[in-house]
Image 1 (tube, rainbow, N blue to C red):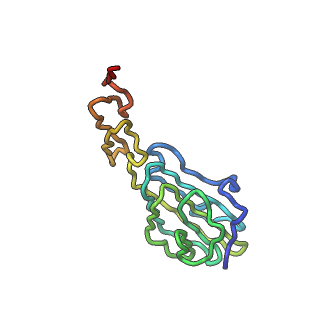
Image 2: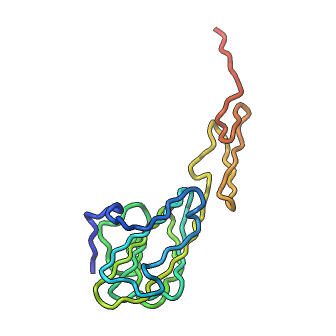
Amino acid sequence: MKICFRSLSTDAFSDAERCFNWPNDCSTASFFSPNFPEPYPSQLRKLYQIFVPTATAITLVFNSPFEVEEKDTVFIGAGFQLPEDLEISSAIGDSFSFSGNQAPVSLTLESDVVWILFETDSSSELRGWFVQWSATTNPCVWEPCLNGGVCIPNFQANTYSCTCTSCFFGERCEFGKCFFFIAL
């Protein structure tokens, strides 16, 4: 079975749940299917997005109970765009799909953006799912130190400090203190 998204962008989901906060609010958090742990609604197409700007990877862990009817699907992928089409199988390139009564094993996507798309049909609906995630972050990934400064990451706090060259100072080595004179 193939599900086509050619005309869908992530903006097409007005009720999407998003975690896009900076800097640390989205490094660890959770999402759950509508009404969890009660049965989720039928005829549902819901998008969830996670964006952690300094992340090098995001790991998803689905908790028990995980109950998704066989004709309903939880799709997972990386990036801001949904693929043009998704095929229902356990892995499609960088996208994954899940259903059934067993929680998937933890899943790590090497990206700073992850999307989850939950689609249901009109038949029986089950309790749904609950997912927690954690991001592996590198606060130096955006190269914050200027003028040849070296970024020193503090991974636990998701912060950094800069070691500046001798002619520069400031939190990001943004200020110069050396003056050069050119003789004419």
